[in-house]
Length: 263
Ligand SMILES: C[S@@+](CC[C@H](N)C(=O)[O-])C[C@H]1O[C@@H](n2cnc3c(N)ncnc32)[C@H](O)[C@@H]1O
Image (tube, rainbow, N blue to C red; front, side, top):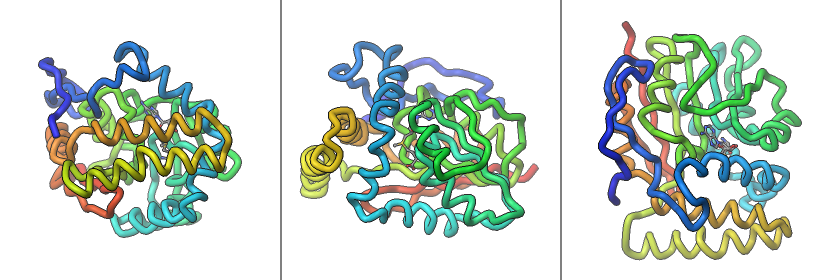
């Protein structure tokens, strides 16, 4: 899959390194007219479908919620840690993190959608801020662990977002990113397209009777199909300073883990 990348480079992304400006997926102008309109389009879509987001998870038996917790623990999330959950949505990752860090730890959430934050606050009682991945309103070296679940496709620039993740993590801190994965070709691609492009938007509409919730799933398919490759994600993590970024496949998702070096 081609990497959606433009020619410019941007220095000083928190980690004081130059990194290429990399869009998380190719432009989808059948949804929004220009790149400038993309963020507003995405946030409006999440605002409108927020009351249905958990219904969509329930249609899959909440296995995705369980998997988030399993994966976080496997990647080292432990009692006592201070965590930032970026793109917290309705709290699927943040609630798992609260359980894993226990009473000695602390979990902070950030998301640009008021609708999603409102849903999250029904189950997540920690501090929540409205904001985006590329401009985190936190001091340097503040968190032991930073998480982002199923939202990488929505950032403006992978390098900018990862630079911020690097900046707010303490030395030795871990970044954990869970993202959808589509096999690039063959039967795997055909099957994933049928499920995520047709069956799941249809089930979503039947379960929610919400046009925005169905549109969210249509958009989900189009963004994951056009998303930056796993190699682009790991290379960009490395470019901002993270050590030994790895990815692990667990179809239909892929999890990326990397460490900020100890000074
Ligand atoms: C699919 S939801 C994922 C929610 C949750 N992390 C989970 O695992 O279920 C994507 C979230 O990303 C948020 N989002 C959209 N653009 C963003 C950005 N630029 N920075 C951070 N979050 C963003 C949306 O508001 C939405 O809540």
